[in-house]
Amino acid sequence: MDTPVEKKKVMLSGIKPTGDLTLGSYLGAIKNWAERAEQYDCYYFMADLHALTTRNNPADLRRRTLEQLAQYVACGLDPQKNTLFIQSHVPQHAELGWILNCYTMFGELSRMTQFKDKSAKNADNINGGLFTYPALMAADILLYQPDYVPVGEDQKQHVELTRDVAQRFNNLYGETFRMPEPFIPKVGARVMDLLDPHSKMSKSDEIGNGRVCLMDDPADIMRKFKRAVTDCDTERCVRYDPENKPGVANLMSIYSAVTGKSFAEIEAEFEGKGYGAFKPAVGEAVVETLRPIREEATRIIKDKAYLEAMCRDGAERASYIAEKTLRKVRKKVGLVAK
Ligand code: TRP
Figure: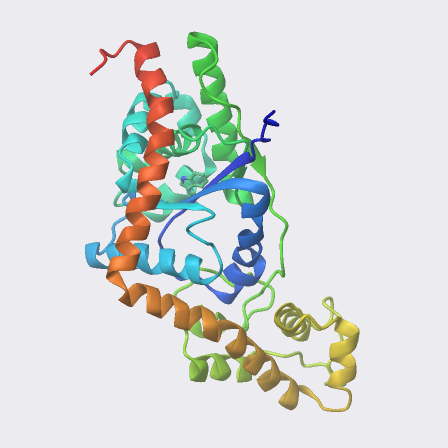
């Protein structure tokens, strides 16, 4: 007799293809994603439709979308074990996005802090898409009936709104959408800016010397680490004290994350050696960690046929699931079947 196979819980997340992926994105998050696929049925997509809410250079957006996808794969997200796709390749997102717009209230959208922040920053381009973005994000999520949506703090309000919209829809038409839970991912190392150890190493910060990008070449990485701020304490020794020595503590966290060494081991290794030896050692360890990722990402980007096949396959699998949900929705709201 067949034993029923236990279905894995579903997890989904979208990634806006803006900015550049950094060492912080890798050590803090992406590094842990590969192993999730063992436990969950994971969907990840490049949210290119969301990127249109702010102005982009079209060629840059296209290049970034593909490059970041390649970088995620190079970081260990296996396209066989995860469903990876580009949002605009699955038109069901836009269609459900429209429908859910009609079940999302003006007042709710007006309360979104991201809308308020972004409209303050883009005062010359407060477009309708920026305002209704959360309804598209609700569609992104609800199409796949996920159990969990891993998001950062800044996106939690959007997941809450998604739940409210799903609840409203289910109350009107009967059980249609599964209620997703926000998932607070296990955080890896919290990597701070090399020139300002009080702020996080950011994906979108334009001035690049405090942040290391996944695609930086080794000489750049070494230069950035050699220039990293250490602390102007008198002892000048490698000791973990985030309160008084935030620059050194940040470098120690990075070194620990890439070598697996404990803080005590690192302190022993650099005993009596000072920052002059420590900073290039961290740089070299980071160069070696990022080297295979950069090489693999470069290889994938050049292999157009592989990349296209991967996108096509991902979009096909995604749209099969998405269409199942959308078919129910169309029927429930009163659209005539095709
Ligand atoms: N809004 C998210 C961000 O800016 C990206 C995103 C779009 C997303 N759709 C999503 C995240 C669905 C999780 C689920 O980072």
